[in-house]
Image (cartoon, rainbow, N blue to C red; front, side, top):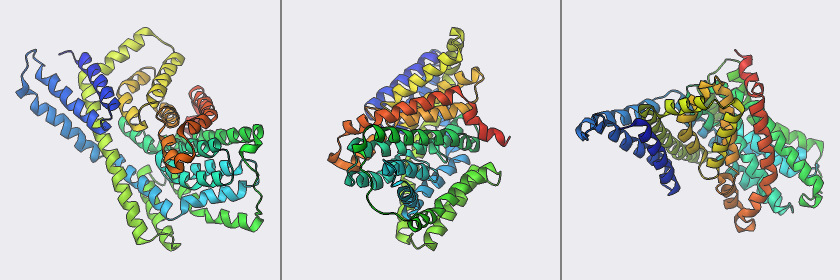
Length: 446
């Protein structure tokens, strides 16, 4: 049986299964297993199922085993645990409160503080969804109670929550690094400047919004003295320490990304208990939620690994590379086409699903053009970040909607996000046009 045709049929089958809400892990693994069986059963031109059982089981089980025993994969539960423990130790909320105190007197200051708080949360966690969920419970209700416009109060947090994908550590960077065999430490460092640029862009959106519509962000009438600002800044020191361990440790060559994750988890646990903000009960709850979230990610990663092995077996990737290079599109056209594919898929699928579905085909094409995979990883993550707030299935929007309930309809949240999406697209263009922005920090350590 023709491998290319089988590979294309497998992609179509996965998309159909995802459209009818089959969990992505089962869709990927199931299609890959059936496709592998068909490939070997018809290898001689005659259907011989007995010859397909052993190679199919070998591909499924060996790839699952190799992935689960991957050293790099151990980062995922560690960084997920870091976020959950830091939240229960009130370290992530301290970041927002510090920004809230310092920016309160600025028009739109609470919305800006929400974005800064999301950036700070992202610096010690690896999940955009967790960031939006956690900060949404804190920031959006407060802005609504202060009389902020409903679109601004929800859209600023939904957009700020996407920073968890780009600012290190990032679960998406870890998965990208595993499947493309690139340095996860370098990916983390590459995401810093684009992440900060995105954060600055969101703050600029709020500033312009409030200047054009002052009534959307009522001025803060309370009093905040210098002593209160100092106390708030001091209370946020654990977050700064954790970020220094992760980024400073990796940049300075003291830790690998995995070692930085382990040290950070130990440090946040000690700080939480030392400050008496973390109890055994809350610590156990953080561990339980980490187990649930990690298991879900591992199932998806295992299914994706099996699917990638099947696609390699069919030879469809070299065929696509040959077709693309034969058409001889320039780099600009190629990247525009890739961006369009990711943006369209981002309207309907979750980020991990998009990445594991597209990387087996896209990465060989990118490599054939001699493009840097670290830079391309930042581009991919930024595209996935945009998908989190793109209608009709912007996951962060639905997370914020679940927090504010019927008070703010989903269409109002999407309406408020139009300004943030325009800045996101501008930042994406800058990242694509200026690779040095992503490669400056990882390149400085050789």
